[in-house]
View: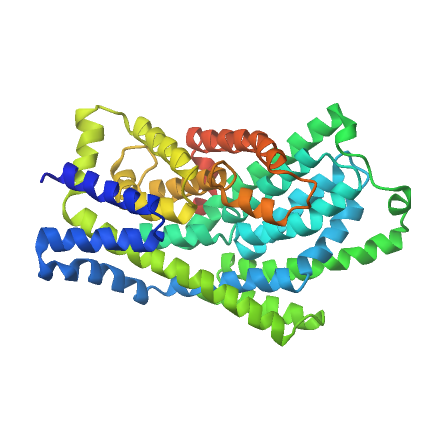
Amino acid sequence: MNPELIALTMFGATMVLLLTGQRVFGAIGAVGAAMVLMLYGTGGIEIPFSAAFKLFNWFPMLTLPLFIYMGYVLSEAGIAEDLYKMLHVWFGRMAGGLAIGTIFLMVIISAMNGLSVAGMAIGATIALPEMLRRGYDKVLITGVVQGGSSLGILVPPSVVMVLYGMIARQPVSQLWLAGVIPGLMMAAMFVIYVVVRTKLNPKLAPTVSEDELNMPLSEKLKLLRFGIIPFLIFFAMTGLFIMGYTSLVESSAVGATAATLAAILKGRFSFRMMHDTARKTLGISCMFLWLILAALAFGAVFDGIGAVRAIESLFITRWELTPWQVIIMMQLSFIVMGMFLDDTAMLVIVAPLYVPLVKTLDLGMGSGNAQLIWFGVLYTMTCQIAYITPPFGYNLFLMRSMAPKEITLSDIYRSIWPFVLMMAASIALVMVFPQLALWLPQVTR
């Protein structure tokens, strides 16, 4: 078998197993193990084993359970709920003020936990009922919550970028910094969209009641204290890391400790909360660990047969594609796969092929590592589209399960398309202007 046929067989077998309902890590790991036995015999088992065992010597892996734990503590302790109350009052006079405040809330929550799930849970259970009670259009606000919660995987600290950094062997700190400007740019697009739509049709977002608008300034200032704890947690975790006082692992430990102390200070710390948080953290952390192990084993076999070089020859030599045409093809494949697979599954399936290829392309960015940092941002932004596109977008199912009864599945599907278009426009801008992602990592190096 030539390398191209072996590569096609591996990917085809993986997709068939996934369609049968097998777990992602099981499908990928089984294909990698079966192929190495077929090609090299029993002696070849050392190839995936050696690659997978490197994971246990990579200290940034410790950040995953700590960041996940921190996100659940913030949600369970009600810190995000208090923050929403503050934003609700301070943005109430603006057209679409509560929707805009919700977007800001999503950015803040994203900056504290790096997960889309926590932001979605807070938005669906707290923000949606409040805005519906005040007469907001349900399609508009459903899209706001879904689009805003997806920012959690782009704004640092992003768990998805940690996973990409592990597989691509790139500094997580550089990936985080690369996501800042694209993340804020996307949030700004969402805000502008809400402002324009509510200006054109004020019935979509009525202002809050006169009692809330006329709240004394002293009371409004008291509400600002709800923003102090999130700011301190964010500064303690991300600020100290960017300034060089803490390492990546230390930063995640600081964030987890700060979130726990905040829950204790607010009197919301209990054994039941810790038990639930620990169970959820363990479940998600183990899932990520198995996926990364399977991806590394699969990638070692895939690279060992020379499939990466064969695919590079196919794209560049036989099809005569330019480097930018190759990147566009990759992005289109992400968007298609994102309709059926989650972000982690996409990463572990295509990383063995795409990551080495991106590093060798001549994209005029100075170095292969810079290209991998930039490509990590593109991948993460494409994952945001995957979260909210039918038929298998995670956020669609989460929204359906947590949203109030008056929001139907049809409303959820109708709400996402303006945000999908804005995300696609953001991806195009980062492709046309790579410095949107690379400038901040370069100036802080």
